[in-house]
Length: 157
Image (tube, rainbow, N blue to C red; front, side):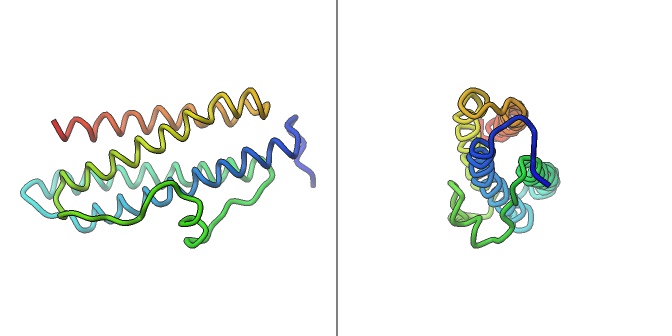
């Protein structure tokens, strides 16, 4: 059955394509957060290990919500790792020690990169593509990523 939600197919496709990039970014960040959780070492291991667990659980919910938003627009969400790696703005590579400061710096940079990508699409989705719903959705994601970035940044002071 056709998706009839008051947004043209062309606009829904354009928005879904941008959301596919976001999904790839969120999935790569989720994976990098798991890596940090699993491989963390140092005197602050326990508290940061628990903190990273909370972060990856939040990101798992974000990943799912982005994929579901793509489906709401009548398109299929990518679900292959090879596709995610082609779409993402982030790198899956991690270089550095397995201590909290190095992991936090990397995760902070990725959250900030996603914030910039989201911010660049808020008005575009609402104005150019007549999709206020997705614009509102990603505004909520900006707030989540900004809060996480603030908390990660606080660890580095």
